[in-house]
Length: 124
Image (tube, rainbow, N blue to C red; front, side):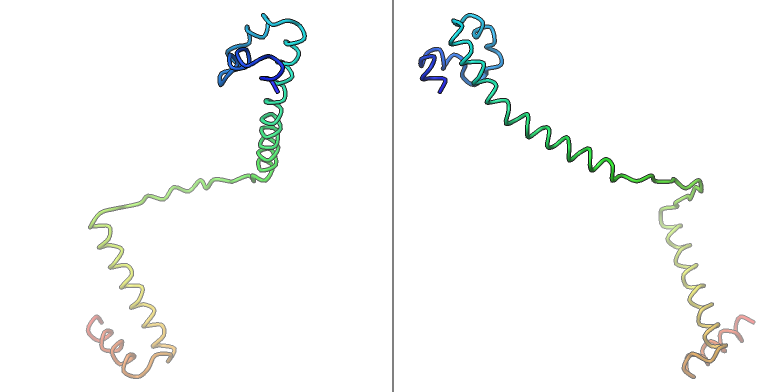
């Protein structure tokens, strides 16, 4: 459309960087100036609609963000071989404690509960 109305040389002057050639529009005669402005308006309207839609979606997503209360309790994380060894010892102690509780309730099979009794004798 722009090429037909303004001619191939003038239309090509607007080319890929039409925004940089705004001064060229001012130098055109009034009827061609209106055509060039309409071409710019048509090309920008699609982008404007897209960006408004993105903004609306962003605004709606923003309303879905909820308040997150931070915990005041500080938990120190220990790393390294010594920390892993301590964790392993704690897990083994917890397992042994669970076995003792289950054995005292009679939930363990006889051979396992006998092993727990032997542990009590050895430790006790």
